[in-house]
Length: 450
Image (tube, rainbow, N blue to C red; front, side, top):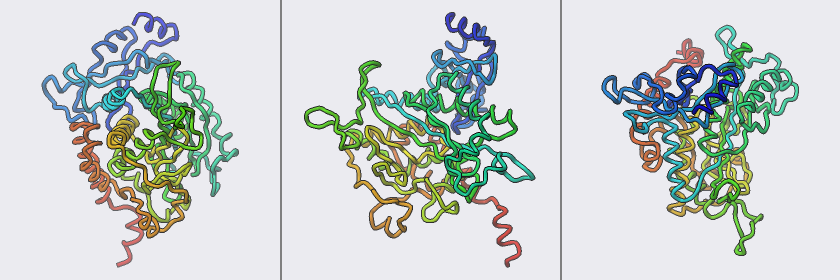
C-alpha cells in the first residue's frame, strides 16, 4: 500500500475517486483523501445502502451500510481530473461480498468459469452520440453532421478531433488499449474499440471510458450519450461483445474456442471448436432472458425492431440466429471467437457479461448444438420467411423481456435472487411509466382527430 501511495503521490494525486457501479450501470462513488488509501483498500468506505439504486438494503441495522472496498490494481490517475485517481470498488455488506453488487455478480460468474479451468476475454465496442439540446429538442452536437449515410465520414471526424483525440489520450494514459475510433451510421454517432482483456477488466475499462467521455464532452459544451436510440429516423447504439474462452497462464495461453483437426493442428476451415459452439448455442438458447439485461431500457426496444425500421438501416439483431461474419444475426461467428451483438449502449457491462457466461456455460453443460448457420441478410427476409426457417424473435418490449428473465432459472441464478428482485421491480416500473406516458406523437396524431 505504501508503494502505491508513493506512486500516486509522485503522480500528483491528492484524492481518490472510490467508484462502484449501480444496478443501472451508472458509476457512483465519493472522494477519499490519498492519506486514507489504506482504509479504502482494507475495510472500504461506507455509503447508505438504501440510497443506492437496486440494493434493496434496509434503512437500519448492520445491513443498511454499503461498503465500497477498493482494488489496488485498478488505481489510475485521471488525466482529465488532475490530482485525482480512480479506484474500482467491490460492494460489501455486513463484512461479506454483497450479492447484488454488479461487480460481485461478475466475480461469481468468473468463478464458475475457473472451475472448468477457463477464463473469459472480451472486447467491448461501445457506440455513443455527441448531442446538444436547443429549444427543448435534442440534436447532434455538430450542426454539419447531416449526411444521409455518415458511416466512416472523414469530414465529421476532424470536426470532433479535439474531443476524440482527448478521449484517446486520456484512455491510453489510463493503460487502456484503444484500437480505433470511427464515425458510425447515425448523425452524431461514434464508436471506440478496445483491445481484448479479462472480462472483469473489460467491464472496468468500459466504466472508465464512460466517465472520461462524459467529462470531456461536458467541458466542450456537448452531451455524451449512450442512450440506445435517441432519434427514431437514425440507427441506434449497440455495445457489441467479442468473446472467447482461454485456458493457461500468461505465456502459455490457449484459446478454447479455436477449432483443431484430429492431429492437433489448428483447423482454419472451421470457426469455433465444439466447446465454442456449445457456448454460443447456450447464449442463443437464453436470448430472451438475456435481452432484459443486455437491452435494459424501454428505449432499447426502439432499436431491436423486427420488420422495417424507421431509420432504414439497422444493425440491431432482432432475430435469434448465428452466421459466419453475419452482422444481421444475434451472434456473428469468427475464427476462435464470436461477436454477441445483442447488448446496447445502456447495458450494465458487469451484468451483461455475467449473464452471457451463465448462458454459455449452460450450453456447454448440456452440450447444446448450434442451429444451422444463416448466410442470408436477415433484414431482407419477411417475418413469414423468418418464421418458416424456425428463427425466434427477441422480445419486442421491456415488459416481455422481463417476463422471459423471470422464467429463466439459469440467468436468474447467475444474477442472484436479490438483484433479480430489484431489477424486475425497477424495470417493471419503467415499463409501466413508459406505457402510461402521453407523448407528443400521440397528441399530434389524436388531439384533433376525433
